[in-house]
Image (cartoon, rainbow, N blue to C red; front, side, top):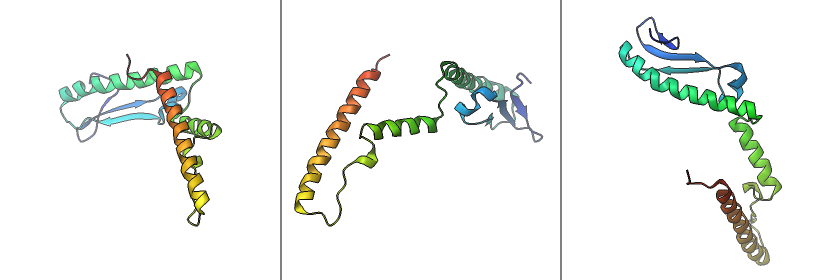
Length: 138
């Protein structure tokens, strides 16, 4: 076989298997890359291996960069940080003004104003964020 990551089962099916280094397992979220190539033809498997292994190498390189820069947050960690930030600035969805079923006329009127004000702050935040990221430019 042409690669140490290409495996052939006892029944002749080819697949990819590669252990993920311990230093980046937390970031990638698993310990092994596994992929069935769905073929018994070694030539087809080698062709699929090239593309799949390139993707794996990119993921490993990105994870290594995150570890080196000290930004080794998992996706769950990123969500937690973002949630705390939005709570701190008053824009978390849980902080959206709400209205009780038995609200008075005045509470209903205030609710509309509060909701419009919250939505305006939220929209301004998103616009500022998107501008700071320069999305859509290469």
